[in-house]
Image (cartoon, rainbow, N blue to C red; front, top):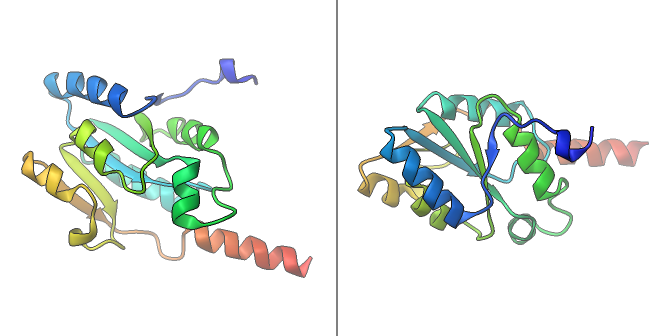
Length: 169
């Protein structure tokens, strides 16, 4: 199937300014916007669990995705394994995801300020005080939710398993 025939269930929003305009309209219409973010390299069941839990907190789930350059800065050489465009397309095809927006900074703080979600969701591996954007969301009357992660499910663990298997082969 060629790219132009790909049917996405969610919408890829090209950047922060487009997000600011789109989500302002949704907020005015009374839509309860939920935001979460991550790298989402090598999608796995842990990612899906987080996204499903996040979506349950509102009417529209916005997923911020680190660009390739920001992933390299944060995760090091060799990452991401899957390029940004493909990561965004994969996320946009998942049932819980309504919008996908890339961000190039090391944190999603500026994107969160543009989206202005009613609910900010992160995994339970973060302490509330560590969650980027918490102050922005709470100051606007929103709330922060931590969701339980599935034990043993992580991209780093998958990469480690693949490397060990490759060495044995």
